[in-house]
Length: 125
Image (cartoon, rainbow, N blue to C red; front, side, top):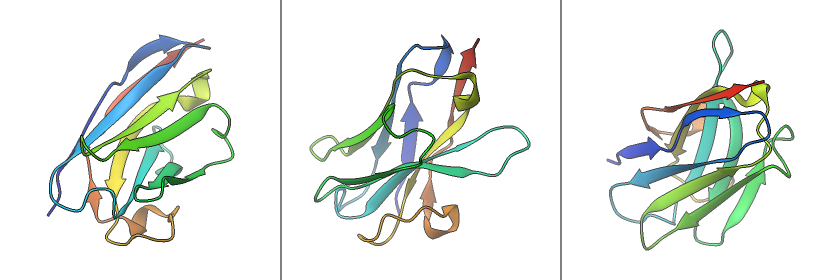
């Protein structure tokens, strides 16, 4: 069983940056695939970025590639999402998720077993 706790959301302006953090409990952090998803009102939860912690292999949604960076600190059991050049369309509740496998970096929310409570990101224009 894993517990995930996100933090770092907030209200920013277009073009600003935010860094989200996700602290995971339990063993073998860095072995399993970790992902960030987001969900805007009235929309489905969508994949943002994923990381295979043991090798730092990453994957990004096309809409955030080049602006967002996912990273992990295995010593701190923490996954980060650095978000730069934020746009109003990035506004959503952001969720951290943990899979029960180490490969591949899945983009479907149904592939992830453990989820955090979410953190709100609001981007004003």
